[in-house]
Amino acid sequence: MRAFAYQSGYESGSLALALAPALTPLGVVEKPSFFKGFAVQPQILARGLLVLADISATRYFKYIPVALRDPILSAQGDKLRAECFSACNGVYARLDLLQSGFDGEIGFGTTNVDIGTELRKALTQVKQNDKLHVDIGGDGLTTQHFNSVSEGVIQMENPVHERPVKMPDRWVRALGNAAEIHRGMEFGFTLKGTQAQAFVASLPPVTGKSQAGWLTASRMGVKILRSAAAGAVYVSGLHRLSALKRVMTNISAITFYKPANSEAGAAMVVAELPCCRITLSLTAEAWQGYSGEGALLTSLAQPDLLEDSERIGKKLSFQSAVDVMRMAELWNIDTSRAEDALSLLAVSGKLGYDSFDNAYFHRELPDDPDRILKDNPRLAAAQKIAEEEMVKNTGENQWLVRSGSTDYRVIYNPDQDVEKCTCTWYLKHLNKRGPCKHILAVQLKEGDF
Image (tube, rainbow, N blue to C red; front, side):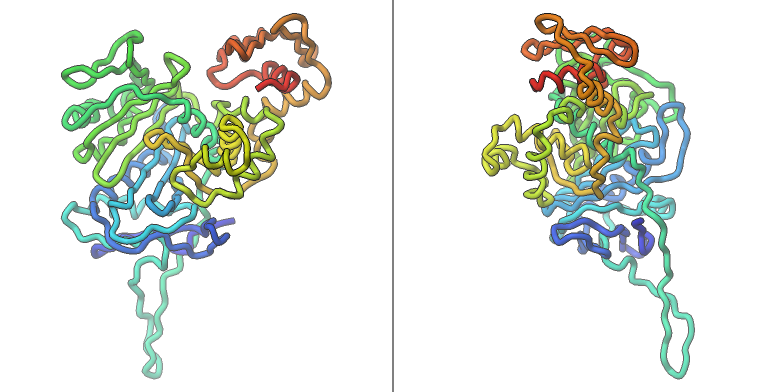
């Protein structure tokens, strides 16, 4: 069990963010310190943290406020990244705090950061012209309580505050799925200046009715269409972007991203602010959660990836951008194998993907060797089907897969990117949430990835 040794706080121009024990290049550090110095943009830092707090405490599907969860904080030398999911797991949020926003050096490592209810209230008091000293980790606020004086010796006692870290297990699974989805995103369009701010101002409130549509750029800003159009980005649940209103006046640009291989699906926006960026990523539908997307199943089914991922994983050192070509050259493998190995590392929470930088970044979370199969029951079921010889080839690109007492017909042609099945899962989702177990079983049997 990990716990916060003290509580995050803000008073008298000092912001102290409490960290849990961190995984760093030196191993586990009980009292990590990622930064100590001054913030260049105090109010933007405060508002950015409030965006994460708002999202982690909100269930957007059938709106219900819930208890706060502790964002994941990664220090990567040139930036700090704080990540969280909404309570419904349908919104991923990341605050990238760039080195230009701080006057000192940023460390390396990953842990959770305490953003509780008291800090949330205090952050609303931070003004842009404040001189804000920031201590991320360390020993918290330096104020002490004087208890008594005995024989001329002043006895002091620091308030003790220790509570368990609140990070749902499904966040780890969701981080892997989110990384794979983000890697498949492509540029849609960008709004700048007042047009970007006007779009945020027009968003429905978090408690509002869910709205969906195809968003495209126009001379007046954003235009919402009823049907697909070139360059348009489909967004389901515009109210899920409402947390950006916290930073509306600070936004200089917003870029919209869409899935590269489908017309409608998950969507992502990246808001640019002085010294930082905020990424919000939405599942295809407001009722869906990232932990159930199944985006990594095809990569996880490749039997030769485990060794590649273990070797590459040993060379990761909290990089803010992982060089795929460098990893491929280092281990003498082709780029596609290196990319697949990185996808496998992402499922354990070791990698995220930054579409703005177009690169993976390294974070490190406590690992569970059995997590892959435990968190992906379709993969476990597919392996069982393949091992029991329940997959038979019946013709060119055609397969018969027995599951239970039922035979399912699968059409699998990787050359033409065709994957079809007669099962209920495929008919319902059409691979939008990853392949069904019968298609996975064929892939495992065929060994052609």
